Image (cartoon, rainbow, N blue to C red):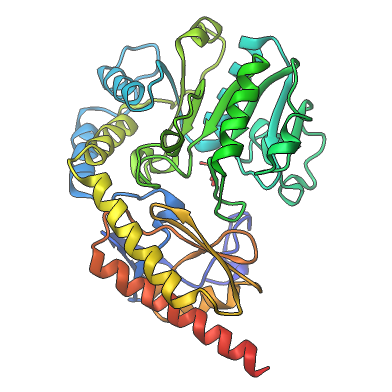
Length: 391
Ligand SMILES: Cc1ncc(COP(=O)(O)O)c(C=O)c1O
């Protein structure tokens, strides 16, 4: 389909591929090609495409009814809220439909609950594209053209412990943090930096908001990545993998925030609709399957071992980083040609910024298929290195 045959705003630079259907780790296009999916719908379809239990749960709910409004109690919402509270160690949930909306809710709640205005975020962060979440996104190229943005946001340099204290003070309502920056280049936060962020938030009576939109729901090998560092956020935001690709998000907060999000304070028509809840409940059930997380851990170790053995030392590869099955391969030059080559070889992967290849295979992928995919990635990077060398 050419650029002139569409009535869709060209906000996305689309590939020459038309989706037809998907199952497990494979996407089949209208053109009749199968692709090994190492991007999981940008980190959403974590349990694999068309997971039978999740499909069955949604189908069942379709027959029962898909929307009645938040004037009703929904047993499905209550069950999912209990599961999310248990999974995060927090207490109350607000449902939305996207990661941006969850962060928007978190920022609003933080300002209302603290009575303070200032929100500290980090350079190269990504929190969404609605005005609040966009203002929290520390990347000027994403904010460009949309002024005036909401005021009160500042951006501390990520992973720079000594700089942090300059940004956080008693006027700070919240610090919003990704434990691993996803869109910003798959950059893991260092333990000391993460801990210091938490300590400063507590010291100044600021809320710690952890954005688990990309890192949550098992992606890094634990239900949520903050748990690996023993952090205790006041608010956690989740989307993407929450309903295995079904549009749904959650902002989960601690008890002391409840009074500030009373009737009429915030809302969204579709948030928590029963179809979404069916998807989330079934997805959480898969996440809680015995050995599910251990299996991710094992596959992750194999993946990093292979990539390190094959790629470390190559001139063109600067770093191999990430956690669980969120993997970044930082290269010296732009990775677009490598991603195009990967598609030609039947594998779909993503960039994170201009120079990082981001791999987000489904968490349910078999070890064999994971290794097959990684070998294709290695091959494409080596081919690119050869081309660069011969220039
Ligand atoms: C960490 C993080 N937060 C928020 C968002 C925004 O989510 P959505 O696109 O669902 O609004 C994203 C999307 O990539 C993300 O990676």
